[in-house]
Structures are given as C-alpha cells and as structure tokens.
Length: 226
Image (cartoon, rainbow, N blue to C red; front, side, top):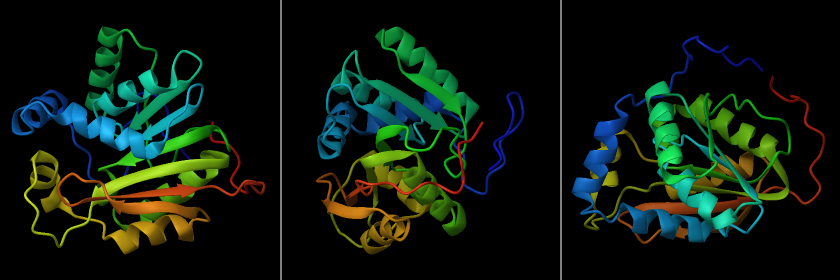
C-alpha cells in the first residue's frame, strides 16, 4: 500500500477541509460553546480505558484526540491523522498549548501509515460522509487492519431523515453527505468487524456504531505501511 512521502501532496478523492481556524471558531459560535459536551458524549460511547492506544482518523483540528488523551492517561497513547496539513498544524499547536502528548500526522484515511494490530480503539467521527464509496470501504478495511484483536472502532456520522433540531455539525456538514445507519453498520461488518452497539448519539441526527475486531485476528495480507 502506498502513502505519500513527506513534503508531497496527498492524493484522495475525498473532501479535504483546509480552513482550520475558521472551523474551530464556527463550531464554537454555533454550538454556543457546547462542543466539549459533544466530545465527552462521543468518548463515553468509545468506552476508553487507562493505558489504551487510540487512533483518531480524520482528526481535524485535534480536539477529540486531545480529549481522548485525558481519558487514557499517561500510560495511554493517542495519534491523529488528517488529509489536511492545515488541520494537522492547528492540532499540533492545540496539543502543545494543552500540554498533552498527542501525535498528529498528515495521512489518508484509506491508507493508514501504521502497522497491523497497533491500536486498541479507532475513532472515526463526522468524517466518513466526506469519502466516496470506494475510499470509505478502504478506510474501513484499514481500520480493521490496524485494530488489535478485540479492539474496537467508534464511528459517528449524520443519519439523515429526522426532523430533530440540531446545532452546527449537521447544518455545517450535512449538506456534504450522510451515511445511513444501516450503511454505517454494513461498512464495518463487511470489513470483518462485529457489531457491538449502535443507535442515536443523542445529538441532532447523529448515529453511532461501535464495532469490534475478532479476539483472534488472522494475519493481514497487506502488511504494515512504511
């Protein structure tokens, strides 16, 4: 599997957001400062434990990854990847300001630059709707590859089809696409993961899926990325 070298532009058919500062400001304004509540609610569904290794796919400006680090503690590790260099630069600055060790990298969701069976938990929140069908399936396969045996993935996205009043994320992202709950479930079960939980997140029309890797993970045929 190929990943772009340092200093080159990553090629993807997914949508890449390159306006990090405006993104943070807009989220804060339209959510009336309650985006922290959304992050904590999301992380509760992920069932993070002290000492776990976490990967945030499509981490944006890093807020969720930074919050996850506080859940896993000093012994835990958190990494985040995003296709936007601007998002990664802002995420690194926020982590330094927060005084937490979270490692961010410019990379593609469909070509994760990590070894097989490296993470206890993978987070994929409000990003899958930015990917066309083929790279979305590639992302799910890559998540399956990097999860440890018994590891889990928490995916959150817009379900659509509800009349619930929502705050920024649905208004802001929803026009770019949604992933129906049944499609979100199928995405990960088709990749070889077992559905553990799913349902409404409790924020707008967002839906979550928690899926688990088999306890005994067969050898991967793809091998680790460089």
